[in-house]
Image 1: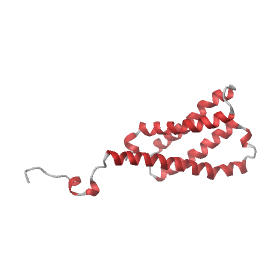
Image 2: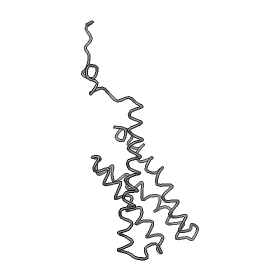
Image 3: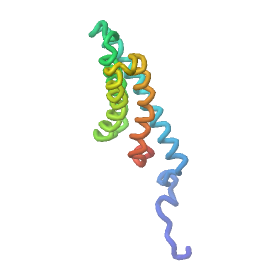
Image 4: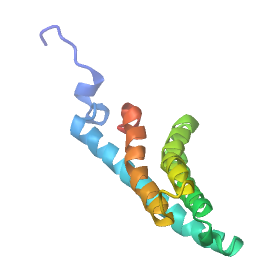
Length: 142
């Protein structure tokens, strides 16, 4: 050799650094996993709430927060399985609740309907989660 040494990464493909494309794919798959986990939480816990609190759907503000909670529980459980730290889980949980909390104000003022509260909260939740992931980009691409 010409005096240069090769690193372990150069010799062993198992230790080679991940390409940017692979990291981006990992990021996208992680987002998709969390969305699936949210739906699992919503569909698994929703019937329990219906049984425990009949008429919950007649209280739109409470119903929205309960649904956000169901989704957050599913997502947080999956993040814990994937060995995310508690601070990461707390950040993502905040990103999921924040849209509903913000929209509760116009709902209580009568500017936003119950349907608008529920739909708006869900629609805004997805980019809010994405923003939380970009906040810790290196961790979610790992």
